[in-house]
Image 1 (cartoon, rainbow, N blue to C red):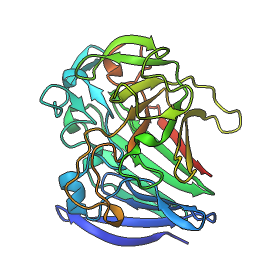
Image 2 (image 1 turned 30 degrees about the horizontal axis):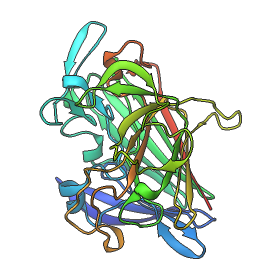
Image 3 (image 1 turned 120 degrees about the horizontal axis):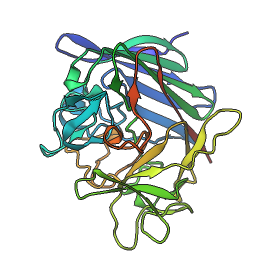
Image 4 (image 1 turned 120 degrees about the vertical axis):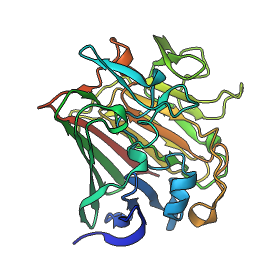
Length: 338
């Protein structure tokens, strides 16, 4: 049995589809092939359907107004300084689409702005595929990517794989903005992050190369606390995860988000090295979202499990280089509970 599929528009003659899937426990997801977007993710909370991600109502709205809501950015999620990196002594240039200074989420036409192909769907899963040609946004090598979303109970599992025919760099994630109770400002949610360190950044959010402790700073989320900080600190920061994998799943606890309003909690577990916490301070969407919601500043928080920003330019960061014969893999689970 496959998930329900409907037309969601088209781009340059390529159809975009929306696939609806559900688990036996009542977790529901809506996935669109544009950007591999999680358009909606709803949990039953005491008999009431609660949407937990920010989503839009049309393909036109996504193309014009979405700050990567629910998408899979790539070929390199997050930032690359000046859009430049080198592999084996050969230099490459990615379009600098963030204020003309740095590359963000793969350049001007990253994976979050492309139509993916629906490879398979069942009642509780969707598999999408994308081919990124050699030279796409300046990245070397033909890259083939698959993204599987699967529901199991109250868990959404994401598995992304990629292979290449030439050395390249890869860093993929999901850029969902979470809001567990539909409030206008997510900063009253409690957040904890399993990280004692973060990658220090300059005023353009490019890592300096230093890895610094969070203790005694507004960036310390080791114990649960509201995202809202008394010093009005804005968060757009990569945390270095403690990485203590569970023997059964191979995934390590990364973060826990909880709404004090309805008691809904979301644990994020992953095999990745870092998690970018972004509080949504710059969100401003001029069109209505799901259920007519208005998405302004702090409407949702992103918890992007991934490699470190600008890792291709820092030898002591985990390598992001993928070579022929290897398989890039990223697995993240979003586990809901009351």
